[in-house]
Length: 66
Image (cartoon, rainbow, N blue to C red):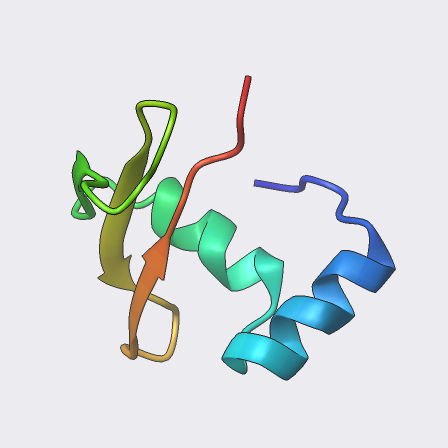
C-alpha cells in the first residue's frame, strides 16, 4: 500500500460512499478479495473487487485504470 490520493477525490469519495480511498486500496491488495467483471460498466472492460476493510466491513472497489 502507500499510494497517494488526490485530497479532493478522497473527500468526494468519503462524502459519496462514506469510505476513504485508502480503504478501497486495502481491499484491492487483500489476497482474500474476490475480483469479478463489472457487468454494469459501459464502453470498457472493468473489474471490481469485493472484500473487507480493516474493520471487517464489506467494501467494493474498482481498480485504478492503467
